[in-house]
Amino acid sequence: MSTRVSDYPAVAFALQEPPCLSLYQKTHRQHPENQQDPIRYRNLVKKLEESLAKKYPKREVEPLMKPFYDLAENHRFWNHTLEGLAVLGAPGMFRIYRLQEDVKDFAIVSDSFYTKPLVRVFQAYERYQVLCLTRSRIRLYEGTKDSFDELPLAEAVPQTMIDALGDQISSPHQTVASYGKGAKGPAMHHGHGARKDESEIDAERFFRIVDKGVYEYHSLPSGLPLLLAALPENQGLFRQISRNTYLMEKGIDANPDALENGRMHTKAWEVFEPQGSARLQVLVEEYGDALAKGMASGDLDIIARSAVSGKVSTLFIDNDFQYPGRLDRLTGDSIPGDPDNPETGDLLDDIGEIVMQKGGDVHVVQSDRMPSRTGIAAVFRF
Image (cartoon, rainbow, N blue to C red):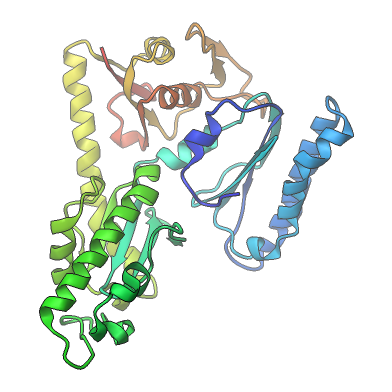
C-alpha cells in the first residue's frame, strides 16, 4: 500500500489481472468537514462491491474488498486527508493516493484502471518539491500554488546526518542536533576541538548521500522540479556536489527552520512560479518551432492517431477542456460519448494516458498558457 506517491504510471498502466477497481473521492483537511468523508467513502465502496457481485462469486469478491473496508476503519488515515483521494485495487494489488487537488466522487469496476483524474493531478505543471536542508537534517515537501505538504522520506533516504554517517561521523558532531538554528548567520557547531575541515567533510558526505537518495527515490519517480531551501553556504556546497537533474537553478536562500507558519509555502511559490513559467515557455516555444517544420499539431484527430502510433513526444492538455468520448487505442479514432453519462470518459485524458504509456511527456496547463486553442497540442518524434 502506498500513499501520496507518484508511482501511478507504473502501477496504473501495467498489465493487471482484472477486475480493476478505481475509486475517487473529494476529501477535506479540516474538522468538521472531514467527518463526512468516511461515510461517503463507504458508499463508494459499496457501489464497487455491488458491481463485482454481478459478475464474480463471493469467494473472489471478499479478498478484493477487504483492503477497501480496512481503509474505511483506519481513523488515523481519515484524520489526515488532503483535498482528494484515489484508491486502486485489483487481485494482489492495492494503492492509495492522497491528492492535493479535489476530484469528483466516482467508483467503477473495469478490465483496467480508470486513471484520468490521476493524469490531470500528477501532470499539472504547477507542482514542485522543496528540499529543506541544514547540516543536521532534511525535510521534503510537495506543493502547488494552493497547497503545501510534507512528504514522508523513503526508507533509504536518511533524515539526519547521524542517520547518514552513523559511527563514521566526526566526534565533534555529537551535538549535531543544535546545528542550523540561526536564521541570519552560519550554523553553530558545538563540540570540544571541532575543526572546520572535519565539519565540512562531514557536511559534504551527508549532502552527497542526501542528493543521491532524494534523486533516486523522490525526484526521479515524481519527475517534479526540486527547489533547495538552505542557508547560502549550504546552497553552494550542495549544488557543487549535486547530480540531481531536477534541481532548479534558483533556490530559497534562508534557514528552512526559520520559515514556519506558512512562510515556507509563500516563499516557495514566489521562487518557483517564475522558474516554472520559464520552463513551460521553453516548451511552448519548442512547439512553435516544431509546428513551423510540420512536426507539431493542434488538431485533435491528427494527435489521436499519432498518439496510438507512439509518435508524440510532448503533449499539452488544456486543464479546462473536455471532449466526452473515448479513444480507439488500435486505430486512434475518436468515439463520441454522452456528456451526461458519469462513466463517459474524456478523449483528451485517453490521449494523455496513451502518450505516457508510450514514453511521451504530458503537461496539463491553464488555458492562457496553451500553445493552441483546440484544448490539445503535440510535438511529434518524427
